[in-house]
Image 1 (cartoon, rainbow, N blue to C red):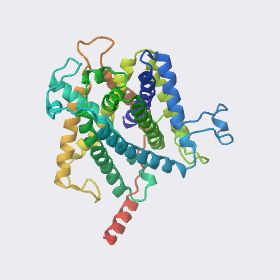
Image 2 (image 1 turned 90 degrees about the vertical axis):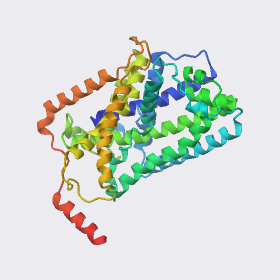
Image 3 (image 1 turned 90 degrees about the horizontal axis):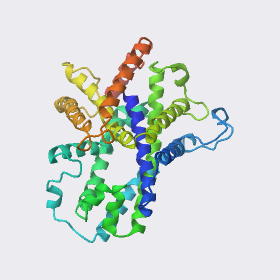
Image 4 (image 1 turned 180 degrees about the vertical axis):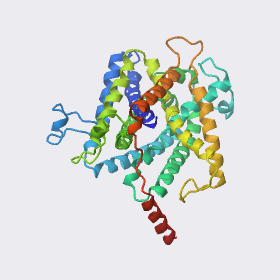
Length: 408
């Protein structure tokens, strides 16, 4: 389920980047409206150039003719690209914050934020607010990414929780001040809600400059594009881990790391093919594609909530070995509340985005969620007997615990 959730989340990242590029064009040409096949081609190109190869000679010739992009670079370059992406993102936040403070020409009262606003969905204010919370969860829907590269870390038991917490902290302390300033600088919120690219309209209302708005849009698009690299890394390694545990068809083929590139090329290419196939929905129903993509956060949060619920069901205090960041009783409360909150938010995420409901604007998330569960069940009946699970050496764990105890 986590692998499927990450695969859909990858598609959502490619889709958001595609929408940003398309919105940049529409911002300058208001008569431009991309057809489904044009969006799909842009979607595939974004997927290919963000992490895959563009060489036409075929996979077998990769080692001889490298015309490839980030993931096929040297292993020394990939961390640098990801660090540069983070620096570029944080720097962009600072630049945009300064631009908004300097160029804003109007200021709304604080009641503009606190006053009820139901938007254009047709739902009442309470339901609209909860649905908005579900959408905002998308920004933190992939906090488990670092878990899937635990084998490549020296101290995963310490560094993984630290990285996950820092992700949430950086996201909050960089976006909340910017969010407040931008909300208080809005001129026409209805125009923003109806724009092809809402954040472009928002920046334009604040700065009243197409040049500055274009600069910000390009900066955001570059950040979105470089962020895809980490998603490709996670999907490839997650599929590799499942294949090594014999949880995928043709596990012997997919459960190998390329000796030349030193990363799982086969599972990464499998993620590319899934992404391209999923994007075919652009050709049939863009609304369906967008509603399914935005629900990627639900699929991932379900996989987070299940182990937390299982942990709560175990009354023993020795289920997990001693570890840093042990929250004690507070951890039990968190593990109890998380499945409940995910279940509640899941209901609102599955609601139709607009009223009245039609075939064009209906929410396909519940349908796809049921299909994903069906796929998981069918896969389990087909290959469940061969599934081995991760190999855990209890003796090694005991030795590690002894060493840590001596260090303390």
